[in-house]
Structures are given as structure tokens and as C-alpha cells.
Length: 193
Length: 161
Image (cartoon, each protein chain N blue to C red):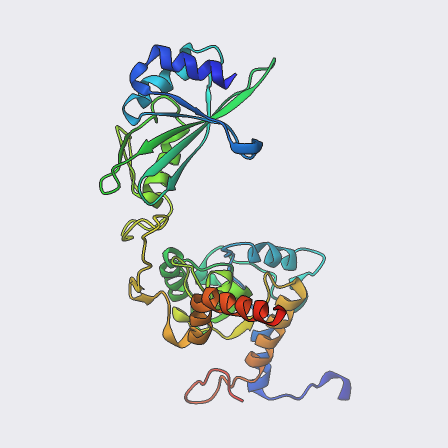
């Protein structure tokens, strides 16, 4: 079903460069990846014109892959005869000023989901009616789910990691635990030999 | 004559009355609040300790049970609620999160490491979440504290002895 759909998208919108990703060894779900600039027309096509009519947007999730961001739209239709769902993926390659078109007017469910994505990863959704933070406080600095996020020391005069409560020895143990594990492995290997 | 007379100290009588009419605030933050509700319901029946009248406003309450994770966003609200309560007021920190950050202690960029950073805490109840029996023990500990207070001293001292 997804092969067919991917071909259709490619025929209708050559600029979208739709690619079907099948998971290796059937772990995970198959997905279709498209270019960011043709997101809106593909979304409208998927909702209204295509054979399956994906009328439901279940969730939007953003992923930070260090070099780029990826936004996943999990779409579904709940036809009585046969229901389908699949993942539409869009790559956002600009990591400094990530911008993507909003689909909040196509699927109203996208409104809060896009706000969450903006809150956690800082992806700006162009055309969103009300793009504010949804979970973090309004005066929060930074985007917590980015891989390079560094936790703030203070927030509103409250110490986030109070020194008198932190077990510093344990923290250093956790940081060094990888090298310690390697050491232990080497020792056990030496004993075995 | 003998049957109709009870002898006690005024101090102790006042404390006895206060400790048996603690009014907690209707205030829950996370899963600990579910246990708090269970404690208030008929099986564990907080009313036995005179502690079951959950007040819907901080101004009528004198016990705040901080039940759940205190995020940094919520911490300022917790402080405001505590300030709105009338003296004498008491705080029970319920569960690991409110005690010291709980599972968010190491990497919780958004969680306050213990509610005692913003409000003074009288009793800590450990557990994740604590069973209703644990919360009841916490409340009984607080009652013992209140019973030892001396209201009629010139300078009122909280928790003597």
C-alpha cells in the first residue's frame, strides 16, 4: 500500500522527491520521506484527494539527529472497511534557524502538537496561528530536547542543581562509569587468559 | 462531681484542638495525589484524624500536602499558595519528588530538587508514591509536633521539643 502511495506522491509532486523507507528486518514502521518545501501540498493531497484520505493526524514528533532535525507526522484514516496509518517524515536541514510550514489549518490537531515541537526543539512553524510555548514556562531559555541543550543553573532565583543536595561523588561515578566498565572488562579478560 | 471534671493545661487543650482539626488544601501535583485521594476516601478515611476536610482555597487551609513532582514552573505557584495560607500553617512533603527531586534528581532540568527549596517543610514522607498508611503516619507525626507546641508563650515557638 505504501509503495503505491509513494509512487503516486512522486508522480503528482515531482519536487517532493518522495522516498519510501522500509525498516530493516521489520523492526519499526515504514515511512515516506518528502522534501520540506512541498509539505503543504502533499498534506492536502493526503487528506482530500488520495485514495486513502488520511483525515486524522495522530501525533507530530520532532527528532534531533545532531546534523539536522526530522519532523514525523503520524497519519491515519479510520475507514470502517480497512484502516491505514503511516508516518510522513520531513527533514529540516537548517539547524540554526529551523523553519517548516505549518499544517495547523489542514489538520486542527496539529495546532498543539506543533507548539510542543516548537517548545522542545525550537522548530518554527510558518503560518501557525498561535506559536507559543506549551509546556515550559514562557520565560524559559533554550529548547530542552535539543541534543546540545545545557540545563540552566538558575531559574527565577531557584537553583536547579543545588550543590548541597547533589552527591558529587556519584555524579562523577556516572560520568566515568563507561571508562570504568571498560577497565573492568579488560581486567576480567586478563584473568581469563 | 468526680465524673464531670477533666483537668488539663490550657496549652495542651488548645494544641489538642488544633491537632485534631487540621484542614488540608485540595492540592495535588502528580501521581502522589492519587494516593492522597485514596487516603481521603472511605477505606483509609483521613477524617478519623480530623484531617479529611479538604479545603478548596488556601486561605481556609492550614496544612499543605505537596503531593507530587514540583516542576520549576509550578514552584513559584506553590510558593504563592503557601503565602496565601493563614498562620499557623504546616507543610507535608509527600513522595520522593517533593522530598528531593525523585527520579528527576540527576537529569531533571525542569524539576525543583525538593520543595524545601521554596517553602519550609515540617514532615517528609518517603515513597514513590507512599502508600496511604505512610501518609497517615506522616500526618500523625505532624500531629505529635503540633501537640508539643505552646501557644500561650509570649513568643510563639513552632515545634518546641
